Length: 132
Image (cartoon, rainbow, N blue to C red; front, top):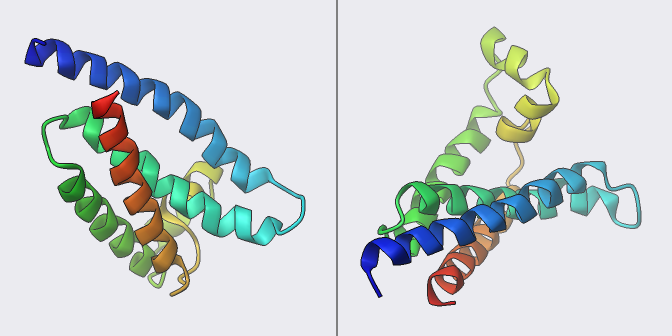
């Protein structure tokens, strides 16, 4: 198959995946059932990582999934550490739902294993989209 056509098909698959993962990720923030604390924080964190892996794969479809996952893990880890810093401009961003969802409000070491799991799932997901 033509490489350009393969990339176009891949990008369509990524967009469809994003249309699935975005509402699912936000739904974890509103879940109120059993183990809501886990879904609100950790399941949402894994989906957040997958989201960013998919977004970067959409922008750079020829980049390896592993390289994208490492970049996502590095940036989201940096964002986690930024939660220890509370300057006014970050507090303004965190005062909104989208801001809290994107950059978080409180640091916890427990987020990191879920970031690794999410990035690993992002690699698997992206590889599967390329092979379908």
